[in-house]
Image 1 (cartoon, rainbow, N blue to C red):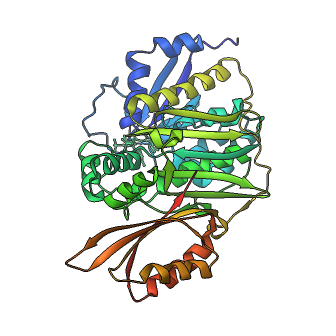
Image 2 (tube, rainbow, N blue to C red):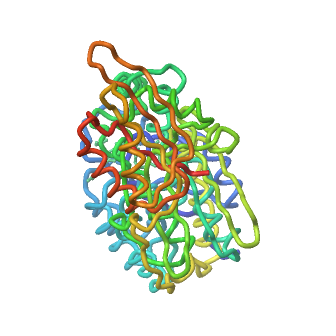
Image 3 (cartoon, rainbow, N blue to C red):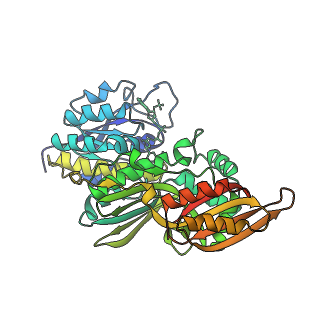
Length: 432
Ligand SMILES: NC(=O)c1ccc[n+]([C@@H]2O[C@H](COP(=O)([O-])OP(=O)(O)OC[C@H]3O[C@@H](n4cnc5c(N)ncnc54)[C@H](OP(=O)(O)O)[C@@H]3O)[C@@H](O)[C@H]2O)c1
């Protein structure tokens, strides 16, 4: 152990997560101190608006709205960033890492967009950059991919990684609620933001998937590499029909390797009820890693919230503080030396669920089957449902055998143009 008698921390952000971190360090520092062996002192806390009322009382002079008070303080060893967003966070990371400060962050956006460069900068400056809280809240998946699972070739990562959408889908499945009602309930409970776009359109999940895939495959990926489909087009009957076939509907974020390519995709999918992911409900998250040595490993837990996220941030803080204590050089994540391509969604081969609203007349199914057959898609089963006397329409639900995504898209264009087809209700992929 070096002669250090304490370690100094600057905190950027005092919201949901920052409040948890600050109160742990100020009001109950004994656990962190015991794990590190010397005191870990919170020196400064950066916010946007100093006049805003806070749910935690800070010592006089600790709060600042000037980032330089942390970035230019040579006595601060570790920067904890829990502000969110990539701007100005990425610039602050660069300054901190370049000046020899270690960084701990909960920021999935900055890590997804600029993580590869920031990790390289950390390595070049012999400092540590840890970001466990950026994916899965209290679930320790980031560190596991960097360390405990590092000896595996990762065949696939399949996740439920956004608690807001999982809450909405669970409500829609169990209460048969419409999407808009489930969303307002999530907003009322504080699980969804006033502008829910990032969650319901899969943007948040795409950031997290990018971070996981970058670590798992040792390759630079960007959020733009992720195929994304949101959940807002789902209707209560999709859940009813899926259930009749033995499936739940879950918003999955998936990375899997096929030869020299990785496919990254976020979409609502049918998952068989006997699959563990089908039984992850409410705001819970799950991550299933399939590795060459470990086989299938499942992580399950609270993916957000003050407690779980603070747990992840403080875990990284303890690890970093031990390095500072020992004046040690961090191991850091693996070099991103792999060059893998991104497999386009058109190349996906899976089974499909297709719901069509059609005129209630004879011969419709034959026309639809022909359009599918022309694209080499064979039907596994069909349900014909809910003939509506008033509009003289019915719903046809088709489950296909494995087919190519590009063929299914082409067939749906043709089917949508058929005279008796009123509209394509939904097309969902099946993840067995
Ligand atoms: N909430 C969760 O459950 C959760 C879970 C996992 C990861 N995360 C990640 O943790 C980070 C923080 O999330 P949060 O929910 O704690 O956010 P939040 O409640 O909105 O708090 C953000 C804090 O950062 C400060 N801030 C924002 N932009 C700033 C800027 N440009 N300069 C100075 N201060 C700034 C805000 O200051 P003011 O208070 O003055 O506005 C506020 O104190 C995000 O990256 C998020 O993705 C959150």
